[in-house]
Amino acid sequence: MKKKIITVAKNQIDKVAHALLGTAFYAVSGLFTAALIALVTTIILAVAVEAYDKLSRKGTPDFWDILATIILPSLLYLGK
Image (tube, rainbow, N blue to C red; front, side):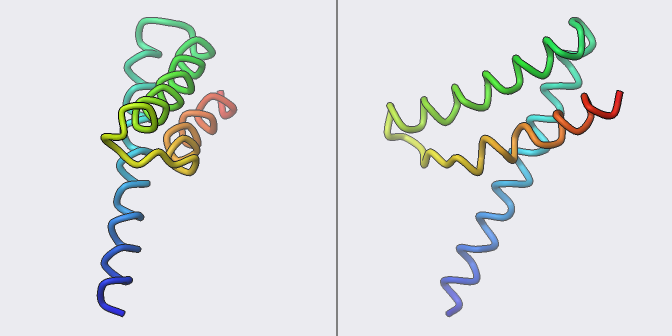
């Protein structure tokens, strides 16, 4: 039971990290490009990171990581 709780906690921390890094990338990209371009590059980056994890077998590819990475930038873009 303790091991399962630790695993769930690590997963949640991972999703928060993806959300924060995706938002930071979107924000910095948005300083130099249009908001739509910043969003598209954030989506491409999220997919590329998970593809790299799968192809290199150095990470754990996860569709939910992609969603966690792009959800906040998408909401910020829609809120403009």
